[in-house]
Image 1: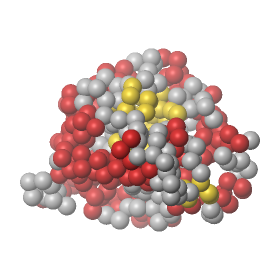
Image 2: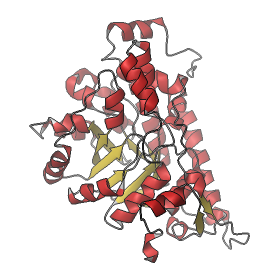
Image 3: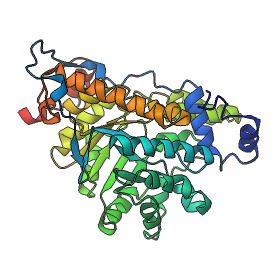
Length: 382
């Protein structure tokens, strides 16, 4: 991987820092592994099981298609969210700055990576605050892990996360699979739901609950709605496997136990398409949904919207462009926007509301999953 200056961001000094202080540099290590190693799930998103019906006579002009939408009280030019990635290091700051600049220019949403490091190391705050400084108008979402809030006694500490980036919402990310594989993993999940309920009562901004590559079921959706959660980011199976990321980290440390766990649970979880439908079937109109986890194209986003998502979230596709520079992020965003518009044109959908009514067919194994889970879909027909 070469950055826009033609130099590798991973030189000998980088690797020396990992060896001498692996915990502090874990975020850079995650970036490197995500860009250089095979970390994709070998189970697909199952979005290929959703077939949109082609309209040979769409009766609309491609140039008239409007993909704008309202989310968290703001108007977005496109139903796209740059999903949580990084922060806490010089490389993370560079990535966040380029992502924020592009998000501002294209008026799309963005979620920062886990801000835990900024709470423990205040000198890293600027690696997150750089986002709002370069994107004053976008929807920007703060982020902290469930294990961290499970042990939190003073909720006021989370005010710092929100104010750090002047966040429009706070995301609690769920990563039990990653923590179970990670050499330094924190698997304290008892009491998380109670803390989420307390947070909803304490904070004055919406709460997002986000998975990290293993999906969210209808049963968990029911609990999250009861706790007052406003948005669910499904982050299902089909893209980056954090079990795979931690597999490589464990392997590099000679931790055979964690390495083997990562290998066994590489594809664990609910595929993205199934998770979107599970959450929507339970949440109906009570919840907003970000469809993420292996989303790679505008067609993926269009399909996610048809089956129940409000936005499509992408992380890994933006990583290398963000290392190279803002213009490369802009190029990818424009490509995705065009793919969404073409998907809508070919289904005769002039707006996102019309896209949600587009005709489609669901094939196995997604169809089999829904039948086995007793999920009637599309739910609005029942």
